[in-house]
Length: 308
Image 1: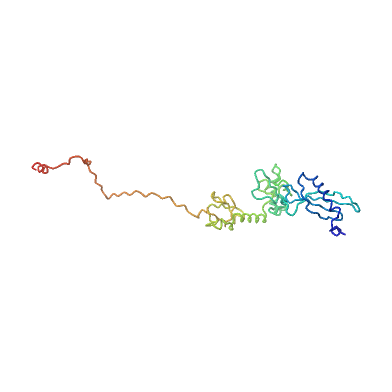
Image 2: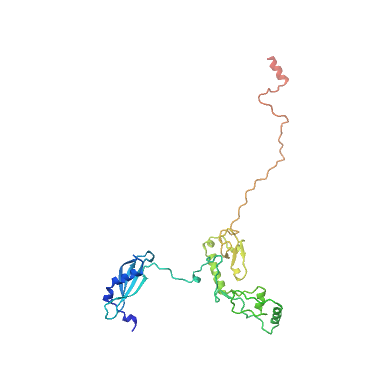
């Protein structure tokens, strides 16, 4: 018979009346003055009752002190079973714990922080699987072995430090390792799609900035192309006045800082001086006399003035 079927719905009378015993136990476990009024009781089973008391602690709003008492069969003495602080229906609870790998957001990584990646990260895949390695008896493999034997330095382990397979001397992976061309892992197709979706959401055609842009980044002179398969849909913005400066943007993104959106008008130029050589302006050889001087007269005028 299960515990649910043996649990009594009617609280034991002696256990239900042991309110003072339960309060004393709660006050001993709690700080002084934080145990409030009696908030009810619940029957936990045969001769087992839990008393609830309000918690007046400001840091535990909505919590309750739960004190469980019990008595043995045919015994009249009620004993203390457990004292614990439990949250109520409207209690203030801490948010659910989330692992750091799920809490991490873009921009959280600061100087000196290290972000490890799982060995089976879906965004990465082995950079070299050995599928295209030549057969041991092929001429190419023999030439690589001779080159490897001629080198005195040993092949160093790549990153990350714990590699599933260390490249053997004379293999394609070891030669690439020595030339600095080998990467332990590269982006998988899933990693490429995840990155493309993230960039498209931040600086894509559906953003409000792109919807109001006069043209797309595909025709902008500030767009710097990138290589690889992602270069067919994305580039890097090199306009310091753009909100996406230094960011990977979709070719369908756009903003008001487009290179061909508007051309600044040229400053007005002053008119060229006009020289008219067909007109001659006369200049007097003698300066004009002052207005107060006596004007010159001829002889006839003087004679007339004398006879009168």
